[in-house]
Length: 86
Image 1 (cartoon, one colour):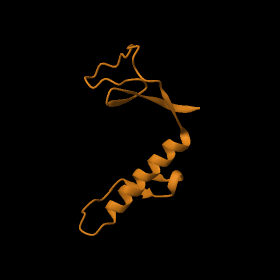
Image 2: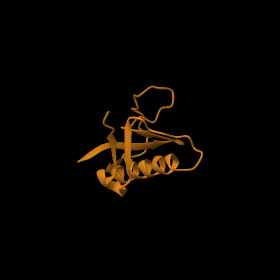
Image 3: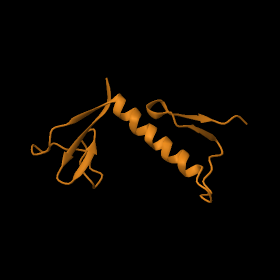
Image 4: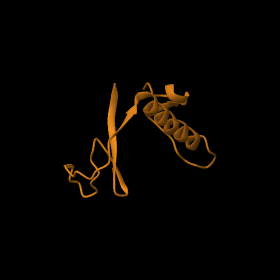
């Protein structure tokens, strides 16, 4: 299975077929590009990159970025964001 699909119309991409930038989610235009299905492995990889970026920023000297309620575990496509115990 897949989580969602994306599409590209003009110079703007959208998720679930929404390529509108004005908040109008209906896209019945016959000229819209075909939809691209994003597999879970790609989504997990992208989320892993986000966790790695946040972890790196958190551990950069003088960044003053802290997460009080969450712990980041950068593990590639198996990265985790956990809740801190009180």
